[in-house]
Image 1 (cartoon, helix red, strand yellow):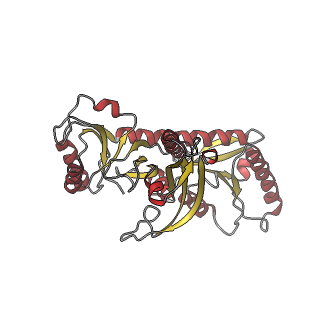
Image 2: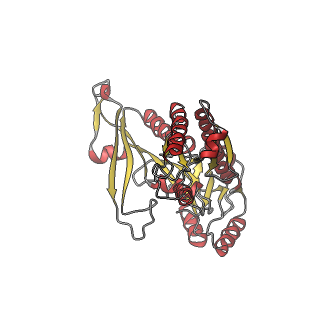
Image 3: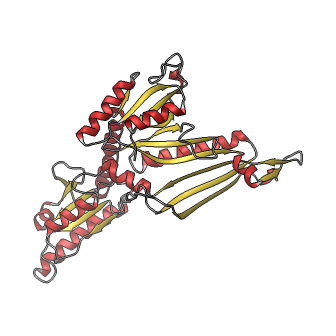
Length: 368
């Protein structure tokens, strides 16, 4: 009955797919994903749901992963088979390649008709439902790694880091200098209590058989946002020595009840800085052009330099599947999406490839 709609189902599941060439996280034979399926009484409600989920995915990428994305709709060539429209979020990685990071499909009534999924409307007539499906996967883990990490290892935005701060006591351990060690650990415990009270996910490294240097290197590789050092001298001075995973000089923070709030503020600042850097990379890496030759030359130069990606290209486009295939064959670039916020700018322009009146603004780029 229409009274039972909308029907919304969300699930987490492992999926197995045949992949000729796998990439860790990005394209594996088996992966974990979140997928949703909905059925609606009206087309308008189904489209609204598909767009709403696209916004949810974009917000998660931005606010949690510190990864800005472009929201758009796929070209007919790239859309999900059987869908009326495929909405997508596209991210730009540090090497200039794009990554499709999540999709939301408006399925129309295509699958409902194929599988005879109907409901009784308010006039007691049988109608086919309007459907959506949407999902993200562990590909987002790969996106996170490629968006922020560096040659020293993983860089995790604080919002998603399992351990946001670690405290490394500089002590030979309880066996060699028990009184000094006990005093130091009481000092450390007080700072950790303040951090936990401020909502910081913090741990203490009590492996006394491992020297501080290797510990520092380990937490750098693992991407722990803040490393805090505390030795007898620091305790005497009433401070912690703090190092950011994102770089810069070490700095001191006064110990005491306020240290938790100070650490939380540092984490918020790091989250914002990572997002700002990624937003600048997306902005700087997206160029607008009316020239196909300019895009082709830039892609060829990037490939010659070894990076393979030259960022994203926003261009006026006449929708033509044959031309789309020719460009892919010539440059390895594909239409990542028709950006939702740019389509009004196609009016009065000509396609950068064919010279025909533009039907869309298209975002081209090489992609994983």
